[in-house]
Image (cartoon, rainbow, N blue to C red; front, top):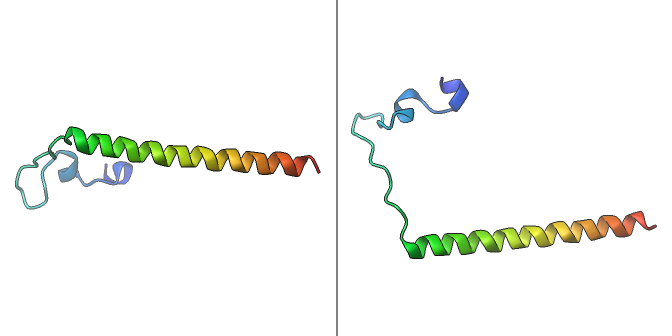
Length: 64
């Protein structure tokens, strides 16, 4: 199963190698989630601008 998932068996079941039980991370606060979503929106807007720029470059090169 390791080769299919890249995760050893003990990690798939939430038990660290040293045998202590796994504690899931705490849920993000509203402020942390807001900041993460804002960062993601900024990243996606930049990616869209890059795509539009590349499209316009390709369209102008096809006009030649």
